[in-house]
Amino acid sequence: AIIDQFVIGDNSTRVSITIFDNSASLLQPLTADSALLDAAIDTFSPGGGTCISCGLTTGAASIDAGNSRPGVPTAMLLLTDGEQTTGDAVAAAATVKAAGTELFAVGFGTGVSQATLDAIASDPDSTYSVSGASLAALTYYFATTFCQAATAPRVPPSPPSPPPAAPSPSASP
Image 1 (cartoon, rainbow, N blue to C red):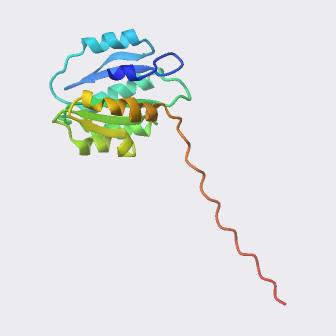
Image 2: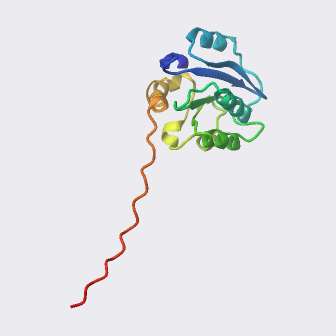
């Protein structure tokens, strides 16, 4: 299972689960309790449409609701088996990313648009956007790229180079 790829604990990874179809709901708020996460996943059953923007907005609210730890990077994993059918997924993703959350977009099955996943995901797409025929086919991505990127410390950008020094006046003989 995807959740088994994480080291979950109060001082490590905490996870929340948001489900979405025609709308979205928070299935499990941020927690370090693997049993609660497993129980939440066991209650889930796939539904109708695909409102990715609803899922992103609800998921971001679970992070922003005073539940995230100050100074700790946040990451969101979007799993979808379909194409956005209502709302604006790219605009919702832009809001999530503007708040400082790294956004991974993962699609599985035949109804997924790679172009939409790329537009939703943080950059670079080669790290943050992936699709496959099934979740099982994506196991290697979760075990390697995703877990490494989601837990890696964020390196701040380099400061800008200083402006060139003004030429010194030349002395005349």
